[in-house]
Length: 286
Image (cartoon, rainbow, N blue to C red):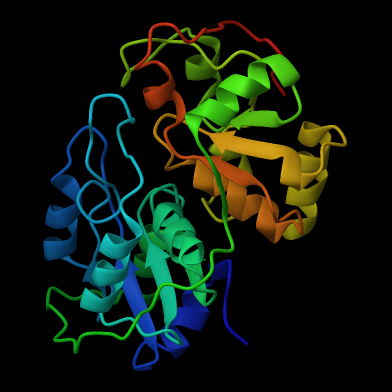
């Protein structure tokens, strides 16, 4: 059976020489966009290829569509082919930050209908601690035969989020830290606060102290409390730029609560139009 949410270090190590598996390094730093390539060059999981969050996993920025707009589907297909991925390849994505960037690749693959894709639980730090294996070599890969299939991931645009301000028919979950949600600090975007009516579910709450994911049972209990009887199909996830929101989507899927939607533009797109309202404080926080 394919791995569709998480892969452990032990499971990956067992398949490290398996040509049907492809490991993709998604390490990134929002404040230093070249930190990921440097980290990869300095040492990575043997056989891994590198995906840049800004260049490979994001589209063209217009100044009004957020910091990490979704790329065109065809561009993502070409990237997966470049990484040697076929339709039946087991993809494993990892980073060094509890999965907060690797989840973007996970979501994009699922968006294109690719089921066998998972995040390495504990990422690079856990891999090094448990295996000590590292490589500076670049894998020589034949182009893959990856194809775009029907999407298994729901997506909403800013207009749907604006309409929801009046209907309150959907629950918006904000994956940013509580301080950013409340508007007390904003280290990245020019405006602080949150979308009115949104509740706060920081992505970090999905993790244990060792940066591995909590159990599906624990996640289900926590998300059911956060959703307050809202079905997953009525949930919209957002964050600062549509990346770490995918962490909550993955956690909900692990918890058996699949079907929620991503607002890819997220806060950085929302505030690009000064006419859209901004809330601050603990409004509906969880």
